[in-house]
Structures are given as C-alpha cells and as structure tokens.
Image 1 (cartoon, rainbow, N blue to C red):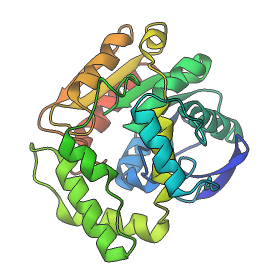
Image 2: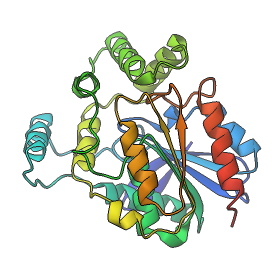
Image 3: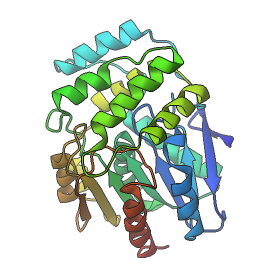
Image 4: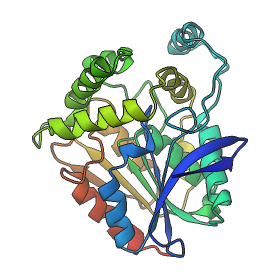
Length: 297
C-alpha cells in the first residue's frame, strides 16, 4: 500500500495488476475502508486485464483525517440539515470527487473506469458529471441520485446505522456484524465469519468513528444529480438489490432512468451486501467486466 498527494490531502491506496492496463477505480461507501473491497474481487478483476485501484476515502482508514469538529458539533449540524436548515460542512461529495481526480493525476492516469458502492456511488456519479473526459465507464451500485428525502432507509436500518459503534474491539465487531446482517438481504445465507473477520480487520487497521459522521454530513448536503445525469454520455451500469434496506431499490431505478442509455441490473434477494466474492459479488464482477470490456479506450 502507498500514499498519494491528492487535493491537498494524503490518500492511502493499493493497486493490483499491470499499470499499462485500463484502470479501474473502486470507491468505498460510508465509513468503509478500502479493505471493504474484497481483495479476491480486486485480484480477479486484475487477472482479467485491468489495473485495479482501491483507496481509503478522505477521513477513513489511513488517508488524511479531517479533525477540528467535535461529535457534538457534527450532531447539531445533522439535526439542522434534517429539518432543512443549511449548514457549512467540513467537506462535500464534490471534494471527495476531486480526491479521486487527484489520485489519478498522482498515478499519471488520464482516464479510468469508475465504480462506486453506496456513498461511493454518489462520488462515482458526480465524477462522471464533473470529469466527463476522464471516465471510460461508470458503475453505480446500491446508490441513488442524491435526493436524500426521496430514498430513505427503513426505520430499523436508519436507527442501526446511526447508532454509534462501541469503542472496544469485541463490542465493535458484534455491532458491525449485526449491522451487516440487517442490511445483507435474504437471498443467500449470511457468512458470519467473513463479516466478523472484516469488522475485526477494519477495527485493527483504523478505528476512527467520528469520520463516519463527517462523511454523513457530506451525504446530507449533496446535490440532487438527476438533471445533471441526464446530460452525461458515459456508458453506465447501475446495479441494485431488490432487498436493500439502506438504499431502496427505487434509488437505483431513479439513477438508471436519469442516465441516458444506462443498463440496469436488479439482483434478486440481495440487500446492501459488502463486496464478498463468495456471494452475489461474483455475478457483479462478471457484469462489470462485460460492461468495461465493451467500452475500452
């Protein structure tokens, strides 16, 4: 793993495959470190002829932590934003998009296939809007168009997501495993060991809970992208599970309907599942490879 100077911060990243191959950037979701992208998924994509880049978003993992605001201040801003009162926030989705562009600059990559999951989908969509000449294809997974009021999680999922995780290691692992189970979906058995190991690895690598709240502020202040997405010409693939309690299926449908000529794939029984090559993500990998192979630069 290595660090890149990007947009006045440091971004921790890791690459797989030959740097002369077409690049694929994998963008993680809210509070998820780059290790959330299953290393087997990354290696399989690299073995299929791509230069795969996974990285820690700002304020997560080993990338720059954006200090300077207490959790109490963040909470007050959240409540103000919930009731429609504008608030300044530490950084925006657009800032996180610029981080991706800066990472590509650092790696001397002019164009890349861009894929984002959940919050990473917001970033990927916005990248297609802001940097149309630097994107080969867009893949948006478990995401929506930025209309937070229209595409809300279930009450149970929202309460679980907004409940702070315990600070001790065992409590954190238990809390996160329960959250993963809740959001997973009903179509396949839940892999308890995979999710416990992932939670433990994340805790040991970087436990920094305040960052999740700051990233959530960026989500709460994002723009509704529907009118902008209608103008993009990037070949786009939208993937969503029909059993997603965090981002409803209607959010994926709205994304696909907003992007001209996009392909929309609904995966039966899948919720908001973490990338695990042993579940639906084996099929998602094949969908992405077919999409990217059809639009090589």
